[in-house]
Length: 219
Image (cartoon, rainbow, N blue to C red; front, side):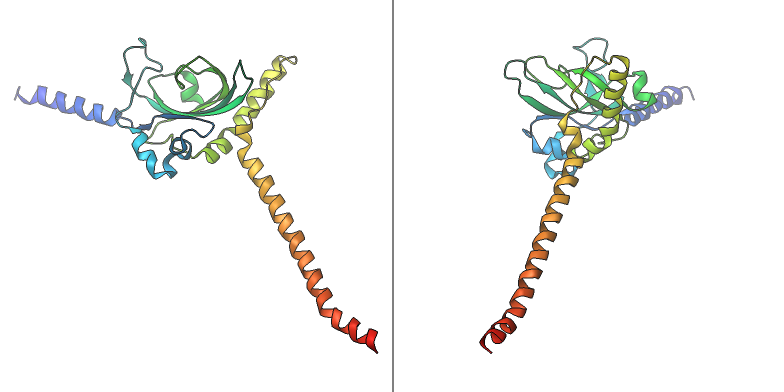
C-alpha cells in the first residue's frame, strides 16, 4: 500500500507540470523584417516560431535562470532612433514568468517600455502596449488585429498621461492606426471607383446620343 503513495504524488506532480506548460510564439520584427512574426498564427511559417513548454527570464528573479512561463505576451509599439531620428515600429511575441498584477487585472499594459526583453542590440525605449494571454499560442494575433485590439488602450494611456501632466506630449504611434488607415484607404479607392463609374456612365450616355446629334446636324 505504501508503494502507491509516492507513485500517486509523482503522477499528480507530473500532471500538474504538464498542465502548466505553455506554448507561445517567440519572435520579434522591426518594420516588417520578420513577416512570419508579424502575421502570427495566420502565417504557416509561424509554426517554426512556437516555443513549446516556453520558459522565460522575463519576470524571473535571476535573469540568467529561465522560469516556467505563466503567460504569453505580445508587444506592439514604436521607438525613435536617437541618431537618425527614424521612427520604427516593433512587434514582439514572447512568454513571461511574471505574475504582475496588471496581467491578472486587465491583461493589457501601455507605456514607455525597455527594449531589453524584446530586441537585441542597443537599448531602446518603446512607446507601446503589451497584451498578456494564458492559452497555447494565444499571442499569435496578426499585426492588423493586434493593432486594432490595442488601439483603445494606447489612446487611453496617452489621454491619462496628458491629463496628469498637460505639458507632456506623447506621439500616438502610427502602428496603432493601421486599421483606421486601411478603412480610409479603402474608402478613397471605393470613392475613386464610383467616380470612375459615373464618368464611364456619362461617357457611354454621350456615345448613345452622339449619332442623333450627328443626324440632326446633317438634316
